[in-house]
Length: 248
Image (cartoon, rainbow, N blue to C red):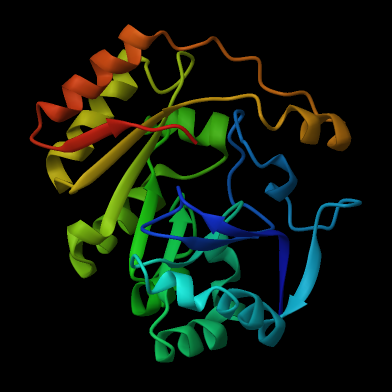
């Protein structure tokens, strides 16, 4: 069995607890204008972006740093794109990693069939869940997703997984996230589920070169001022949530 990846990044420190190996899987179910990994928006191999790897070989790569994982509750993180799209193919590897007691984390937008989320719930130890745009029309027109699916999946996730194992991560943009209607919806979601941890982050331009190689126009976003993201942070903290601004 094979999966399609673009990168295997060892000694990652921002993709879950501890020292981690992050696997970037190709393909996504939505298309955020600000995507930092544009090479993962489609499943097809694009020149230098993407290759297929056998699960056995991927497991060997993950296990190379097993001794470091044990030092600080590290492990493997599946990212993307949308990693859950390949979770059926990954299931034999997930089973093996569980037997090896290697911590498994996933970064997901939750815009996937619930059957794929069910697989993740069975094996994954830590979830990092994106909270992007929550207005129904904007989700459809801008992300190409269905808000009803997101709402169904996040509700199921908080029902099945202890909330201390779920971190919400919010990309802060003037154009989308900080629109008053969207901010209100995010605050309402945070109040409803009371996650243990919320992270906010500003957009960056580190993917500019990849956009050039892919011959895509990079989203021209307005820079978020420090007081604007700080104000949003305080609104979330007032809900009794441990929230912080992080650099990604």
